[in-house]
Length: 422
Image 1 (cartoon, rainbow, N blue to C red):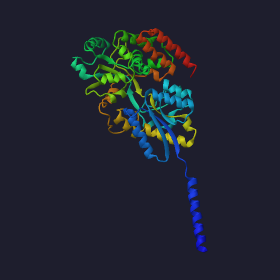
Image 2: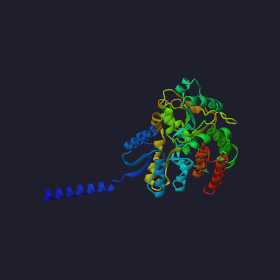
Image 3: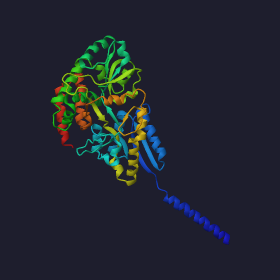
Image 4: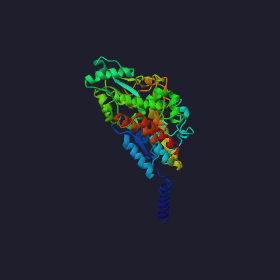
C-alpha cells in the first residue's frame, strides 16, 4: 500500500509541475512588420536578411512580416491603417504625402523617444514636425537628385559630361542624330517630379533657407523660386531635353533605358546606383541652370524615409518594448552594414571603421560630401495634397495641358488649404 501511495503522490506531483509550467508559459509577443521592397530588389533582399536575422536572434517574439514594393506597399499600408489592422513597425516618412496618411489615421508618434541620438550622425534626427517631432528614423544620407552618365556612350559620341543646361542643349542634337535618349527620366511617376526635378530646381533658385521659407509659408508657391522652377521645367520640355518618352516612363522604365545603353544620362536618386549595371558610369551634379543662386547644390540630406513604430504599438507595454527593440535593430549598426553592402546606402547611424559598399556605389560618400549646399526636398515637408498639386502638375506642364502659372496657383491654393488641416 505504501508503494502505491508513494507512486500516486509522485504522479500527482508530476501533473502539478506540468500544469504549473503550462500555466506559467507566457504567450509570445506578436509584432506585425511591413517592409519596403521585394525579393528582386536590393533593398528588398537587404530587408529580408535583416528581419530574418532579428527573428533568429529573438525566438521569444513572434514576428509576422510582409514586404511590398512601390505603390503596392503604399496601398497595403493605407489599407492596414484605415482598417485598424495590427501594424507595429513599418517604413514610413518624416514628411510629405506618405506621412500624411499615418498622421491622419492617428498612428504618427515622435520616434526620438525610442533611440539614442548620440548614435546617429549630426543632423540625422532633425524632425519635420511643428515641434521638432521626428516621425521616422532615417537609415541613410543621400543626395536625392543624381545626374548619372553613361561614360562609355559619351566617349563613343565624343562628348564629356554636361555641366550646364546650354551644354545639354548641344548634346541633345548629337543624341537625336544617333537615335538616343538624352536623359532617361521617369516623369510619369509624379513623386519623382518632386523628389528630383522640382526640388533640385527650387533649391538652385532659392538656396537652403529660401526652400525652407517656401514650405514654412514665408514665401508663396506661385512666385519666386517655385514659379521659376515650374517655368524652367516647361522650358525643359519645350526644348526637348525631356520628351514624350519621359512622360510615358514610370519608375523602372528609365532605369532600363539607361542600363540598356539607350540614354546618355539618367536623373534618379542616390539609392538607384545599386541597380545600375553599366560597366562605366558616373555620379554627377545636376547641370547648372540660368539664374541659379545656389550653384552646385543638391537636394536631399538624411532620408525622409525610415523605420517607425506605430502609436498603437505603444499602447501595450510588451508590444512597445518589443517594437523598440526591433526599431533599434533595423536602424542600427548591423542592419546598416547589410544595407551598405547590398544597396550602397551611406548609414545615418554612426559606424566606426571601414564600411563595405555594394560594387559601383563606393563613390556615393564622396559624391554626397562634394555638395557644400544641400537643400530640402519640398515634398518631404508638405502634406500630400500640396505635393500632388505640383508633382502631378508637372506632368500636365509636359503634356501642355496646363501652364506653369496655373500649376503654381493650384499649389499655393492647396498649401493654404492644408494649413487648416494641420
